Image (cartoon, rainbow, N blue to C red; front, side):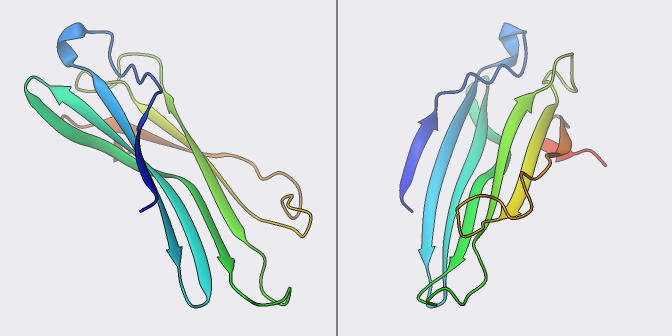
Length: 136
């Protein structure tokens, strides 16, 4: 583990005051293996439900994997980046739906994505009353 910090983004999952507040935490990790170096940043959303604090959503925000000590004859690094968007509207069970936007790419020798900037892929999540679930 490298760091655990509060996410200062204001996640407004509901306009209703009685639905509680949401708190975001970011966990950064680095794994140094014999062949690979991996770095991950995770986002966890916790929702205050009365006197209970419950984790309702988690996702990988950033990921980087690259080979170690290979003198330019290894496969290039792979990267992934995600952002979280709170959808407008009512949502489900009192909390708005979430949209996870993600893109992944292979890094070229100049540090830019091989083949150009990758497109975003989107996944919608809905609140089932306990936690967010991926929409089929």
